[in-house]
Every structure is written in C-alpha cells, then in structure tokens.
Amino acid sequence: MTNPDDWKSRLGSILADFGCQTGTIHQTAGDGTTLTLVSQIGVPDHLLDKITSIPFGKGIAGVAAERKEPVELCNLQQDLGGIAKADARQTGVSGSLAVPIFSESSGKVIGTLGIGKFAPYEFTTAEKEHLADLAAEIGDCFEHKAG
Image (cartoon, rainbow, N blue to C red; front, top):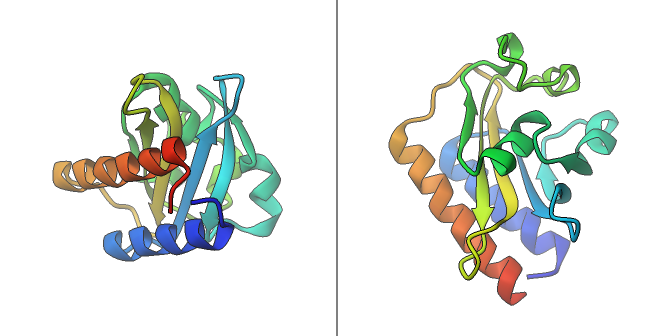
C-alpha cells in the first residue's frame, strides 16, 4: 500500500471502528529513531509540521515507539505525566491511544498507530488488543509494500 488515499481510507475505517475523531499512522525512518507521518485524519493544519517527524521518546507516538508498548492518556488535556506536549493539547483530543507497529520478521518497531477522541476516554484491554492487531496488519503492509 503506497497510495496516500489508501492509507487515509484504512485510517478512516479504524477511527470509525473505535468511534474516534483523530488518528495517525507513522512509519519508522531509516535512522531507526524517528517516526515519519504516513497518514493522518483530524489533526489541525497548523499542527501538521509538529507531527511530520517525531523522535522516539517524544509525545504519545514517540513514547509508544520507544517503550514498545501501548501508551494511553485518558485525558490528554489534563496529562500531568509529561507525555503529552503542549501542542498536542491544541488538537482538542482528550482520550488517546498509540500502539507500536512491529516488524513481523525482526520484532523491531517500524511505526505507530494512534487514535483519539475529543472526550476523555479510557480504552479497554480488548480495544488495546484490537488496535494492536490492526497495527500488525499495517506492519505487514509496510514490510511487503502490498495493498
């Protein structure tokens, strides 16, 4: 899958499944320490430059990539743990979840999948597992360049 419209369509389906209003798909850049935006829905235009390239360990997506585990914020607007950056609050998103995308062959993080709701929300274990399954499908596309 290389067509940006295909990625946007896939992301739109994921957002609909979860009742979310915003989402991102990032892929790990060649340096292995930076995420590059593949697709997004619902991120305000004035914030796009902030999410085009994200270092591992920065923001929700970067922390998910660095920790190799899901990162959830029940209310991004009130995050006091330092994961959410000030610019992230400008999205209006409250409940958010980012999961790493792993390489099936190497086990390395090859991207992240993030979703968000405008209302505070705590994702269930089943929802986190479902999003991780969807991330695995995206990882397969990344590795095989298939649609």
